[in-house]
Length: 121
Image (cartoon, rainbow, N blue to C red; front, side, top):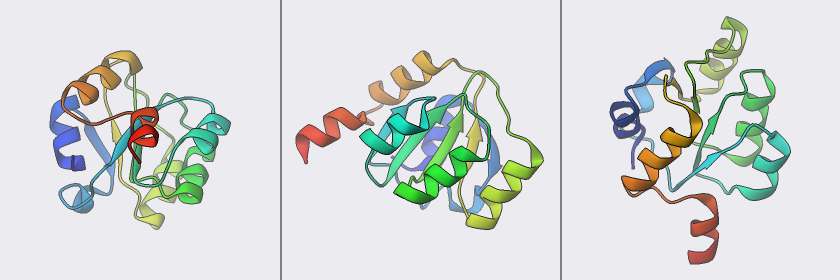
């Protein structure tokens, strides 16, 4: 699923990386606020859904090659964090939906979670 489809499905606002949405594809999705869990359980080409808006999410995204970030519950990072993402070419979206509903919509649309992807290769 590409990030343009994610944006439409979640009625999300683009915070950075708009030029990459149509060409960036997620192979799986992970919903987490603990970056230690993200580091332990996700694989590259994963889209992270989170309510955490600090610079650590950008650093984590870089470390494991996440395809993008979606901030849930209408959260928005500071302009400094948005600037970090822009410098790194990292797409970021914000949706008003809660984490549970965001995960459910993406799963129903065919984007598997990290555990399903790990089981299938």
